[in-house]
Length: 116
Length: 113
Image (tube, rainbow over the protein chains, first blue to last red):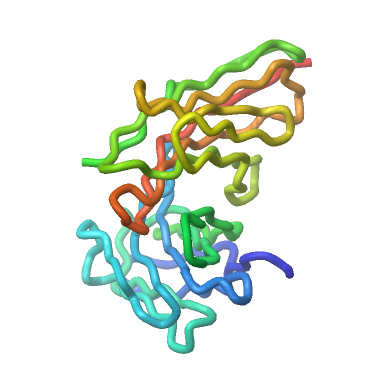
């Protein structure tokens, strides 16, 4: 198992452009999470999936953000009309989601977004 | 609402010193508790966990005990190494049956030779 992977690792875009990030979780993990992390802060929850179903979204999540997990495997996070305040590290994590209290998460390396 | 509070860093220690990083939480019910570590340029990695009161999680010489009465999960290590320099995040997950985790702001640890 190669762990959680994210692409691209870095993205520089101009304000107003759309960007899309991809996350490939550990195979057989049925929960997938997206977070945003800024300097000096912990991961901030954005949304999560159980298989292909998006079950929770942060109320802080702007409607410019959308996420999909079409076949319950990889996921994409799209940000439309990017703003400078979107500059952050975007983290993906997967979790086994088996019966019982198995909440531990396995994180990818993140995608660093810079909006100029 | 749910929250996690960690001591502010950076924590600066000499090699072989004793480490404590304090963590307290507020949550509905009895969540599972975690410490994650983030080394420079890398993603977060699970360091240790505890799923119920009085459980002790341990890994790589680090320990933390789930204290329900004080809602705390302090991280300790008896003798730190330079390679332990990283940012440490306390988190809780599973409070009230929720699958949404809550992370602290992280505490940076710098260990000097």
